[in-house]
Image 1: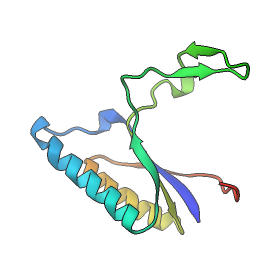
Image 2: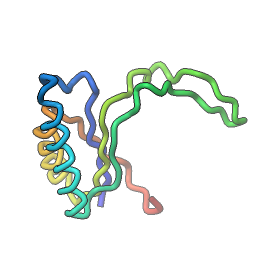
Image 3: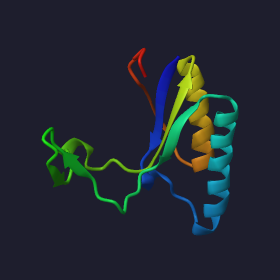
Image 4: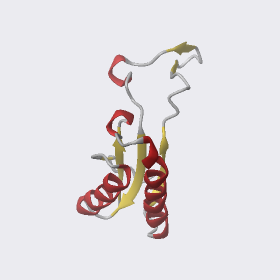
Length: 113
């Protein structure tokens, strides 16, 4: 089984304010479906009010992040699935619920994780 990251940036979710509850309900329904199917590993949204920090090998903490990852925000789900096609099907369900396209990436196989 492969773990897949299904994600989207916050700015991709564009809908009227009055639709927030229905979008939230739809997203939670997909999460429940994935949990009931036994494929849910982890998911959630990045808390954009908490700034990122870098932690060095010596424990030194520095505010900020890598330039390449400066804009990581939004929502993420990790699902463990038997095929890429299954990942694309789940991504489509999340896309409908969140009203925005989803990016799909496969994690490299690690027998210990």
